[in-house]
Length: 183
Image (cartoon, rainbow, N blue to C red):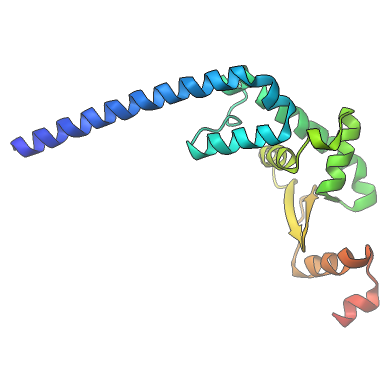
């Protein structure tokens, strides 16, 4: 019985120490975010590194648009705005591309729309914004075809045949009926 009590006391002390360390770390992370706010918002590489650092300690600055991170950094607003622009571009280009747009082409169009250079907006930024669009349903998804990443903005699952045709078209930019029948 005494061993159990001692064990419970040790566990409680450890838990209290861990909670204190986590609170200290969180406040230091918030201070870091405040100090480097403009760099996080402007520099896509720094922003990605910040997200990776947060992920390693189990903090998701995008989890809530109303949270402390959105307040400190405006990150929620950044990805919300980016998501809205992605939806606009996907809808505007759907008649030309059938609802599949190359991630690099999407980035270029986003940069034109935002009047920024390509370096200020990373693929990671686009992927994070697209992942937040999942709340809208199954309409937005990133798929890999060969070495390319495509953003699908139509609520249709691509089957094996669709993927095969996309891979054939990747080499030349088009595909013929004969090529499809041959494969």
